[in-house]
Each structure stands twice: as structure tokens, then as C-alpha cells.
Length: 129
Image (cartoon, rainbow, N blue to C red):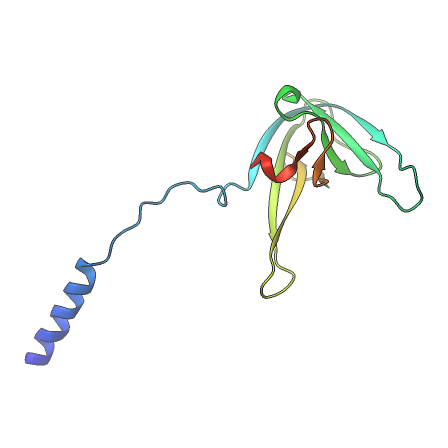
């Protein structure tokens, strides 16, 4: 009986001292961000052999984001497609992790990996989140 009382007391004491944290939206939770509707794109042909092709995507929110730089030789988005920037956490090893960013259509059927450096605004892509 004494033992049951002691266990009950421990259980109640541990529940009473547990502080519940209030969950707030953190920047790590946000993984997809709307960047406007597709307007047009421009292709940048590399100057040297072996360098990647880039496309600069213009959206209806161009005044906020500028042109979005992605790795591709052509763009298959259609005019008016809703575009989102998505970030994905990659873990190549047990200790290291990093973010990879891509621009994608509303239904995720078309997507392109973004370059770290965004051309028009001279911003890093990670600053948009």
C-alpha cells in the first residue's frame, strides 16, 4: 500500500512539474512558399564548357523576389502556373545536414533546382525563408 501511494505521488509530481511548451510556427516548419504566377523565362547559356545552364524565371511577384535563378536548359512552366519555392533538408551523413531549394508548379509535376545565388536581387536563396 505504501509502495502504491509512493508511485502515485511520483506520477502526480512529475505531471505537475512538466511545463507545456507553446508551439509557435518556426522558420524550420515552413517548407513551401508561394512566389507568384509564372510570366516568362530567359535562358543563360554558359560561357565555358562544363558550366551549368541557368534559367531566370519571372513571376507576377517579381517586385518582391526578382528573377528566380534555377538550373535548367529550358523551362516547361506554362504562363499563369502558380509557382512555389520549396526547401528540402538533406542529410548525406549522420552529422551533416543542409537545405536544397527548388521551384515547383502547384501540382509538383514540374520542378527545378535553384541556384544558391539569386541573380537580380543578389540575394542568397536561404534569405527568402
